[in-house]
Image (cartoon, rainbow, N blue to C red; front, side, top):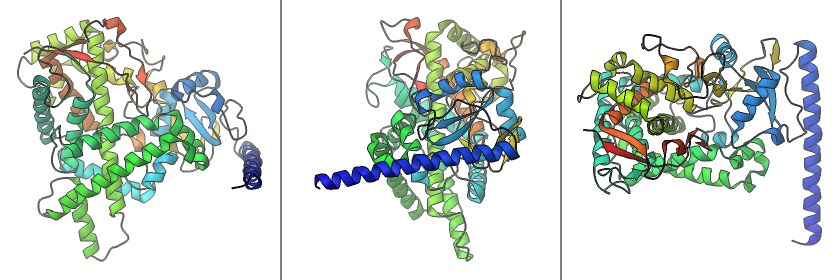
Amino acid sequence: MGISDLFLQSSSSVALLGALVVLLLVYLVSSFSFSSQEYGKEPPGPRPLPVLGNLLQLDLKRPYNTLLELSKKYGSVFTVYFGPKKVVVLAGYKTVKEALVNHAEEFGDRDPMQIVNDSTQGNGVIWSNGDSWKEMRRFALTNLRDFGMGKKACEDKIIEECDYLIEVFKKFKDFFPVSLVAGEAFDTTQPIHYAVSNIICSMVYGSRFEYDDPVFTSLVERTNRNNQLLGTPSVQMYNMFPWVGKWFAGRKEFQKLFAANRKQNLQLFSRLKETLNPQMCRGLVDAFLVRKQNLEESGITNSHFHNENLLMTVIHLFVAGTDTTATTLRWGLLLMAKYPKIQDQVQEELSRVIGSRQVQVEDRKNLPFTDAVIHETQRLANIVPMALPHKTSQDVVFQGHFIKKGTTVYPLLTSVLYDESEWDRPHTFYPAHFLDKDGKFVKRDAFMPFSAGRRICPGESLARMELFVFFTTFLQHFRFSPAPGVSEDELDLTPRVGFTLSPSSHKLCAVSCI
């Protein structure tokens, strides 16, 4: 390529960029004029720059912190531009609840991020909309319940998985780098993610995996890495400016890992299909294949039960059924090590009420302090601070502001879980938030870690059961403390950058109590 060719290419790029800037300015001016004249004012917000929007004001590693600060200046409903993309942010418990619950229809669509949309193409259960989303969500909920979610059968699976994990903890270096027999420090990430992931695997694929199964471990590790990538500045820049996406390394790594998970799932589906018995479905995949087969035999070929919906629904359930629960459990153990007096109270209550027998879900009502600790862990951990992005399904006037159809909306869950008007000590680990003066557990309306409304987490009941059984079993069997040479004060509660907020890298000691 000669110098003249490079010059022409450069000139074309500049001309294209100039045209985009002009079109963007025309769009912004016309949009503002139309909405303000006919429907009232749009939500206020910081003045955006052409193309860049409010990018220079955003902390791309922790954008939720920037949005929280902006809410103090512009109110509970405000506008911010992620590059050229206009976003309306909802802040505070009352505002988020009013939008997601009282105006569930208007704020109920999903706005998939560009990098997710590249992979899912509107399929699956988390990032889809319309009839496909309704059908897949209904199918997933029905079948997860059929395969145990919220039932004794599911509790038994969790207890069984606890037994496997406890045994792994007590063994030598067969599965993980260290033995816990002598209370050596270890990273909780892998064992906890494997155990939690096996619960959703047993319901989706129909069986659990061994912790050293390379297919299983690679699925979990790639999923964890992609969750981390989704929160990186590199991927966020791609979501804002996809036309220059080839320059962002995070996008390439995400797509490579996603393609590998896709390939492995297709191989798993193939094996399940070979041994499929329509009269005895082992899990959600079997149930989907049977439904698809029945529809095809009836001559219905345009249903939502097609291969891509199966693949994406399974991948979505695998991600959602692993990361948030496992991450919350890791936060719980870290907090126990950091606050040993609270750990003392949990273990005293467990010893007094349960003794050495296996904890059951029905014991929750008799363990108010332990239940309060689990809830407070979820609140303070703030796993999904910005929720998943929503989108308005129609024009709506909300709290006096006009919001146009198709506008991206972020319900800022961190502003709910840390709402100073709802919580006595919002930035402190304080289990008393969930206890009355008599020490009994109390529900709190502003406790919204699973979001709310039409898009509330479909696996909430499963997650609540897992958190309770896993956490209480861990605390029955082990005493958690910082690694040798590390004090409680030195344990860092700053979350690692990622789409979900997980603890920064750390190691804990787990000394057997039994």
